Image 1: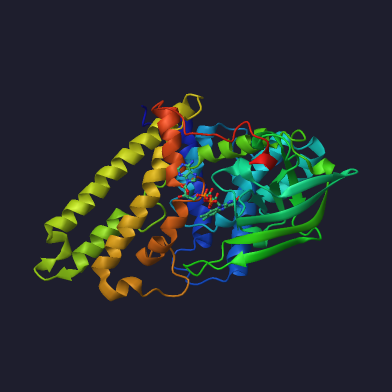
Image 2 (image 1 turned 60 degrees about the horizontal axis):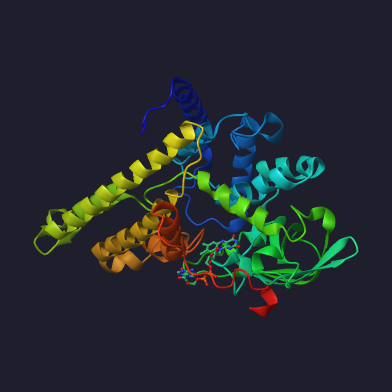
Length: 403
Ligand SMILES: Cc1cc2nc3c(=O)[nH]c(=O)nc-3n(C[C@H](O)[C@H](O)[C@H](O)COP(=O)(O)OP(=O)(O)OC[C@H]3O[C@@H](n4cnc5c(N)ncnc54)[C@H](O)[C@@H]3O)c2cc1C
């Protein structure tokens, strides 16, 4: 494992740091208080446009698509430095993390010329319409029906948990085009304009007060076949490519929460029966355990970075961090709330996970589900890392309409 930047990586890091120091503070949302969605999004779009103009929106992409033609490692360096600020980039994470890289791989050159740059500049947002009420972990079990009609597809059905659908202009959608064959073989992948007649987006109000995802209903939605990505009934291949795109994200071992320093500070301030909480052996023990866990998570992360730095693909061991970090956020938030007493559940409107444990505690369960539940990730580790026997899959060869 190599923890150090190469001279070229160090030079890019210095350049990125200087650029961020000059521009990022004006967009930082720390301490900005409650911000209506429209205002946060407008600030986010301005930041995204600035970043794209400098080539930092997708460093690995060519200059014609707002990139620098750099390496995945350089992309990670930028993300590491950007993560030191709290910038309004959440609105674009799905858009630029999954649908847009898929458009670059599977769309025609004309479609790429039309759609990529506006998305990288934050002018247009894309969502990922995969999950349905009866299909999430088992993605190949989706039912949203696509029936061919001339040079169009007609879509009927429902998606759910679609992040940022309510502000999205376009979306990538997996459909069931052939129910007569086994489930993985009858899927077709399309992209849709979210303003097409027949698409209805209903935002879901979350426990934490936010509204970051929606239900999306499709009623006789007509989509041109020219908006198909991949082969007819070959959508599973595109879907797998989509899921692989999630691998190169930067790991924040705090899970976006206030972090251990803030917890130690809190433990110093809070008085228990026999003195400051930090002097209590149970409190010290818990903090020490989380400190050790963070070192392990960082080391695992450096293992992935080393692979990237050598031009290799990180393996499925990234699933370990995905399991451990949201659970740690949940436990740490709960612990901080206990220390704070009644104040632990009193949040100001618009409080963020980065500053208030109550918000972290409410949001952590969602992070244990999004992008693969704990159980699914354990299956991945068991099968792909530990090489244990595979999960039982009895429906693999049965036609979908016979399941
Ligand atoms: C914050 C957030 C954002 C999201 N954003 C999007 C988005 O933008 N687009 C999108 O399409 N979806 C999105 N999702 C949905 C997400 O992908 C699904 O919720 C997730 O895949 C789980 O699917 P499910 O909810 O149907 O649960 P299910 O798959 O029904 O799982 C229910 C329970 O059964 C367990 N389970 C299922 N299969 C197995 C198995 N084989 N072995 C052991 N246990 C199993 C699961 O771990 C879970 O505990 C989002 C979810 C969240 C929380």
